[in-house]
Amino acid sequence: MRLLVLGGTHFLGRHVVMAALERGHEVATFTRGLSGAPPEGARALHGDRDDPAALPEALDGWQPELVVDTSCKTRAAADNAAAALGGVAGYAFVSSLNAYRNWPPGPVGPEDAEPTWDTDEDGYGPNKAHAERVLAAAVGPAFLTARAGLIVGPHDPVYRLGWWLDRISRGGRVVVPAEGMDQPISLVDARDLATWLVEMAERGQGGAVNAKGPVGMTTYGGLLEVCRDVTGSDAEWVPVPEAELVAADVQEWVHLPLWLRQQEARTAWDVDTTRALELGLTTRPLETTVADTWAWMQAAERPPLPAHRPAPGLPAELERHLLEGR
Image (cartoon, rainbow, N blue to C red):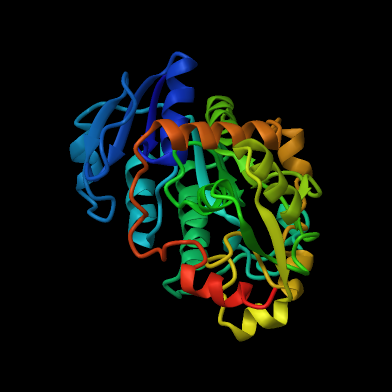
């Protein structure tokens, strides 16, 4: 079938393209053309999603039957896709848990029991919720919205797991959050999510799904242990109490990637995934994901950080400060 990937050159979109090609689809990607070419075998279409004329002009009569949308960030992008693609047989949209009004910190129950943003605010979560509404209205029962959580794996330009792999591989004494090592965390491999998104579009599956790793799959400390094993490092954990991290202006999720303060972490990963499991979303073993990510980092040129995102990781001077006297 003719399958259009909105996105398709970075991370999740790239894996969607590869999954669709492997399943025998005729694949085209629609991007601004600024971030490189899609995987070999896909047709590259270019344009700005915020321009209402760009997508119809790029398609130029090529009518997709299926769509996987990985790149919608603005309300205009959603409105324009809805106008151009409302007649497709299956549309899988990558939304976010941020579409929920109460996440973070959560917890999040079944999808139909949780409110999503319904304001005009120009923010990530409200924009995703707006996109869900307008695209669902245009596509109808064949529209699936995948409210994604933490996505990791090869080709990840955001570099959160990547920073931990790099830092741990250097060994020595490594600052870790004392109260955070036991906090639950769940991840989904981008390759597993990508294949599932293509399958959902093929089936014309509709509805909202919390598309994340299962609750209880690992802890923050467990993830770091896997990073240490995969890199063969002799890194030594140096636990620093949360109060000291906060006093030193250590920024959660940024300076110590994937770390959340206790109050938020207690419920942030408690997200119901019953429907995702019923629809066949699985994720490979964490050890495989981390090992494959590390192998990719050693073998490939790393993509630049996405625009307007702070570089993740603990600055060297701040790390030295936290390690002093320990």
